[in-house]
Image (cartoon, rainbow, N blue to C red; front, top):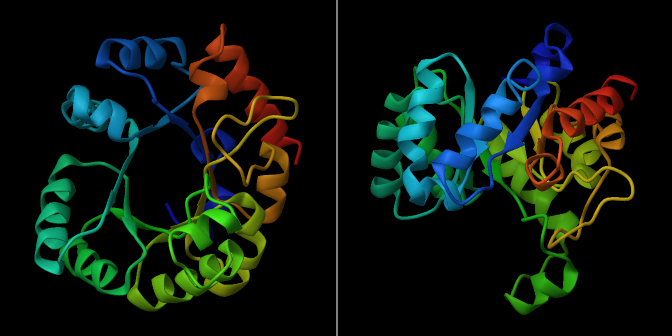
Length: 237
């Protein structure tokens, strides 16, 4: 799951479909529709709190890769104990907010496992005004780079950032960390609540190791066609 192995990975392995749906039944239907096209799925808050954690374990036990997007942040002990149990689920990726102490606790808890810990830098729904409103002294780009340096120092497996920042992040973290980019929108699609968005092809060119795509696929009338179109753009980048 690290960027240094990208030459051995197909684009299919680098596309993560966000199962941002309200029920496990709908998630199961999406997975069935995407069978043979997609092999990696993200499960976040919406589905996790509707039985999605058991569904994540089911997918993982069957050999499907799962990105558990929990964005953990708490006192060190609580983060560590959470990570220890998540390791047992067999998922591939897990997000931690990029606070140095939380990252250090998570890295220690996951040591010896295959779990790739991802540091959430700045949410792709946030722009500079949003940063000001919550009291940060940095603009999004500057904070992403600062947190990337901290994640590298902590021993994290990768960074979550906007693909607009992927090239700069890659220069900091080198070739051996994952750079996972949500906020991916095909040209002409609705941005929704995302602000720092990039097309699939540009994300690959910028150095993203994995692209997270939710609504443009799961909300499409034909999910397979939508996923295949994104994969085609990734391959042609």
